[in-house]
Length: 83
Image (cartoon, rainbow, N blue to C red; front, top):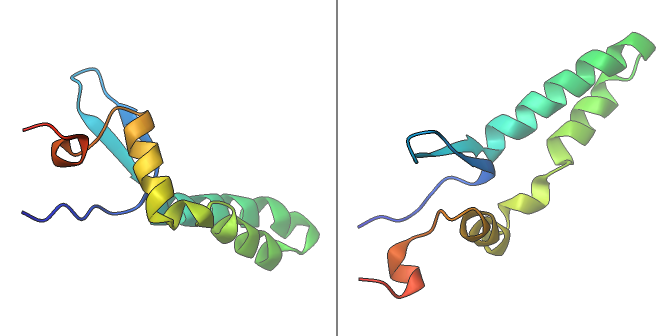
């Protein structure tokens, strides 16, 4: 069984109880694009793009990913000692 998951920026449980994942890569690109759009008005889109891509980079850390999932109730049973 392959339990490798893509890194997430945020997790949210929908009304049916399913976990919705906002993938970290998508989040970083989205924030960077929005920031660049704002900063383009004063000629700094490139700097804002770089800052947006880096702002949550630490969330790639496997321990941070585990924290995000565990603190939101989304976890792998075998890591929690359940059958």
